[in-house]
Image: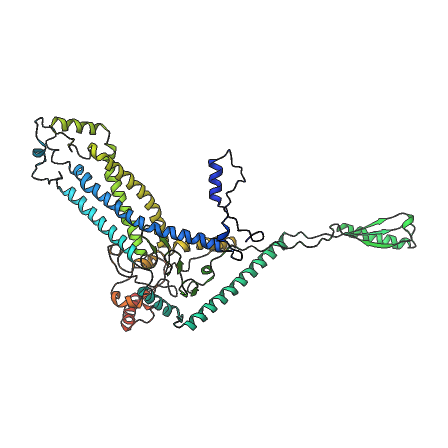
Length: 556
């Protein structure tokens, strides 16, 4: 509340800039759009009620947007698939009329459609056409498979509980099971945050104090002594005083001023300062940026989520849309109507990869028909169709659309190139995040930490990054990269965070995949081949034997 119970006012800088740009005649450089919540949303004594109300409305809108996009995504896939099989393939094969395009004789539609190597749709199945069909089916299967798993994979449930227990055992955290233990865990977490908040404020005050001392100038004082001309002092005293004053004046600190006879009877020193002493100004109020609680925690330190009322593992965050705690949360995606996190991040990356490949393929394939829609080849095809005796324009030339197909070709080309550009940007960003062991949330937090370290003259390093090879393995596992991107519904192989600077294989996955070797480390990385297997909490004897066998081979 601001101003004695009045609702708090809000403004959005982006809207202010847009208003000044679109309406320069009625907007001044200081014009702002002020948002005032209704009094019913902000009753007295509730400061954050308006914020909570706005966030709830936004979360609800994003949640309702998910089903619409869930229906839109399959519609786009079906539309592009239909365009390929019923529009692009006849043009790609040239149709059964290509061979008779130059014949002057008149044939009927049924006679022209009959060909030994063509089906009822006019497609001639050559090796090139079959290769295109196989590649499209491969892309279609991978896109649909990864999209369905992105939508249906949940971030909570038995899989979450199993991974959390394994992570607690690996990090040495005693997971609370009873209500009393959870209360103690919550209290310890809050006390820890309060202590670190106080330490952070103390450090900020100390930096502010040092900065103020460095900027404050050193005052120079001068002493003025007024002595009368007819004083009772001897000439030697005056001469000695004069000598002393000349020496002090050399340093710019003391001066002697000889007065008149009226001041002879009042011989008293008077000390003044060139800079009058002023009271020290009050230090400016300490302003610290709002730092999320997870940025105050150690890389492997557990917290407590007050919204879901459960312990919060490292790198986990609470999703306000799905209302659950998510391991390695990246973001909530309305297109998949789900939150992207530890269990479905591999499916999300594969989905972006295959969608990008399909859009590039569609753009290249539809570019030539899009260019020939109104060119000389199109007019030549219309002329040849009339000369052949057809009532409608047929596919007489390769990669030249008919008048009825121009809308589908335009739709496919523009959609492929627009989605391809968008997915290229998004996929490139997530490839960087994957190889640097970051999530979208951690990317923003790490940027703040890196900038603060540069301001202090130090260099900050991501504690979860183990090199791009092992960062890849953290998401895709230890199998070959070309096999890892194929359709699969397996759970993640490693725990969400490295333990003691090494990947830690999940105990539930070690028996299934103990025969799969890890990728060779990058040059300059000092580790043994079996180090990723040795760091397993609760591993059985088979893992230990495998570790010894691998380590021995490496040492030899």
